[in-house]
Image (cartoon, rainbow, N blue to C red; front, side):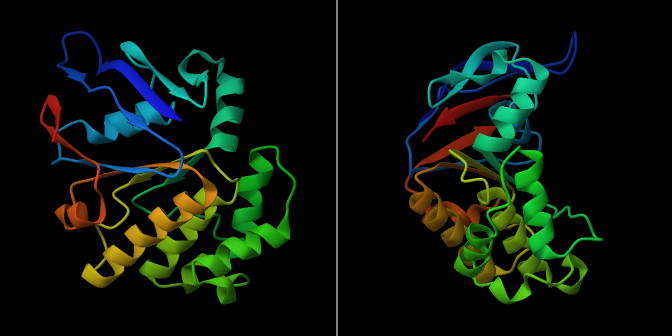
Length: 217
């Protein structure tokens, strides 16, 4: 499903080079990329998302090497195939929860599919908040809406950037479980990038990242 080969990146001439190990994650599987600040884990996630273009190597999702796509084609591919769960929740505050999810589908060129949208919210235990504004929700509830938005386009790849760093232990493991369950249900590859060592016990596949180097463990 998701494969990478010989990935590296450099932020400008003379900057140190980040080199990343080859990665392969099948449909319904999950991988935890674990490392401290400065190790390049966010850079790796941005390469996997197609937000950054690699210095060397390639990223392939379900047969498509999307780093070679033109800007508009890449945006459409990302919108339809990659779900992003960001550390901080970003919403259009004028819209309610359901409208924010519908907007995500619209931006990917997909029809509204309100029934599926509501079913995603229900599966995350937040269906009753569909008509609420994001600011009316707790931090944990907003994080679930962020996950719902990442899932609403039925992505083939789910990328989560520090999804549990602002949560207490019970909610951290709950969010981790939700991500893994939803990925399995959708048949999506899941990659979680974090410094949160609490998640070690939740994943059988762990890649430890050290500053300016990476290695599998």
